Length: 212
Image (cartoon, rainbow, N blue to C red; front, side):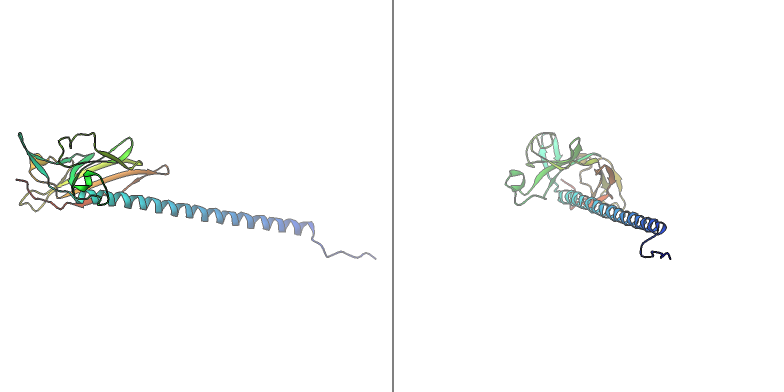
């Protein structure tokens, strides 16, 4: 008489068990991969948001402190403001109170904000120096090397007018007053991707104030 051994697995049962185990492992690894990618994207979004916040705060801090400084020169009154489409230069009250340099100790300083191959930069000088408008000297700081594009626009609201226009250049000597607001457009790269920041509109404290 032959007894059947039913204590073990048949070959078919073993193959089914292995197949189910492989499916479960594949699903598990896929879930882990999705979770990792989601975490990676979350970290990247956080880094991009932080960069935008830092750049926006820095530009706003410097430009909002615009001070209407001018000097009487032999050829006429010189307004210390440069407004081009790719750079801006101004005297600002936004100084580092903890700095030891003469640029900040005076309570006012000249800043020129521009972009070149090194990224977004700021040049600082003592505001009343003769060479303040030259593109050399002073202290040069790289704010962000990843900035690939920098544009400025200026809001022109003439005295007595209720509506103004955005212009790409500003000649303060010709107009006799300063822009009511400055718009900053910044494009930067992060981890091989290009990001365009929302336009930063900065109201100036001088607005339509004329220099006589």
